[in-house]
Image 1 (cartoon, rainbow, N blue to C red):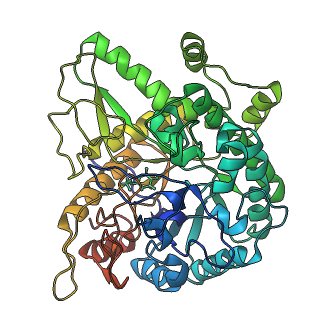
Image 2: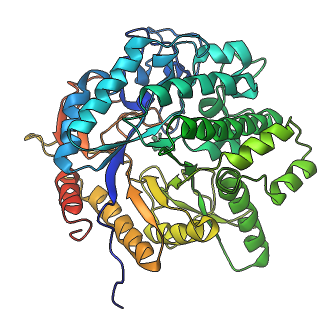
Length: 482
Ligand code: BGP
């Protein structure tokens, strides 16, 4: 059948990053310590540890140097421009601006760093897409009020937002208040999404769960997000705000109605709940029932509900890496790596980290989301984590990454043809950086290779991968030449 629609002419082709995973410079120019700075390195089998007692000799902390974007942003942005980027997704490290999160006055050196980054992007006509919060909570707020468990954090965050909106009102138009806000619907989100320290433990941990606290933290982030939207629009009515949902697309493993019902529950809780709050401005019926049945209590004021209703976002953005199969059958074979578990899908291949690769699921998801919300959509993360090899003549032949991204772009094209209003694609990641789940450097996602290994050794030199040249042509041809 003939295609009706192609990628629109002003489509935002680009790439994504996050401050804590690429900047490094963790303690320079007045920067404070963030919760990501106290996460040790780890491996697939031995997950990252998180300790507030920084001991440089005992542990390796990947974010302390990361890939040194802090000092190399000019070189990196020039490479993005060479690929033809229209959009660059980045986050602002809260602790560069407010080292402890609670100061009255911001740290000028931190603000200047982002002035410089925006100036550099502007030079090449690259639109910034700024995540205000990407796991960079100030550690001091953990000690002061247990992070987002306390609603005090909302005011600190708003103060941070006010400084950003005022300072960058002419440099930045697109904002994402929280990265993957819905991770707090599972215990996975406990540590790096909310900065909550569990009582009686020396460590932050994602193994201990306290649902009351977790859902309270999520609620505080919803209120903070809505207040940020309202405040931002006062400062510049042209600002556009978006969700950022870690979209875990779910299928019933079989047509057994028990599997179908479970899948629906999972979709509502993991994906729809946060989207419904941020896009529709409501606390949906199913979550109220869930809270009642599971005895979950935390404070929701009338004022909170009003703010949530008024402060809805303008676009829906999400990360898409995989899909999960859900089943009531306890004996079904499970996948080890999929975020939030799930049963093995016999029709799909998986990455080395056992994330099930499902390009068609992206088209399905885009239609699902557009049907539910009917607002513009951006895919703000999608990509393949893989071990790359640097050849003796400094080449990286990552045809597996090209294959992954190509297949996902094909499905985005089909979704656009279906009628979905997709406006941008910023795959993860622009450049190799520190992996969140493992802390490894060698789980690479970038179009740009960085010479650094899991132990933190390497020259930090940048090299163009084969995918770099390929993506450049994709952008040049506006998605025609895949
Ligand atoms: C998302 C995060 C990113 C990124 C990505 C890949 O959840 O928003 O920060 O890291 O996942 O995950 P990982 O690094 O664990 O492979």
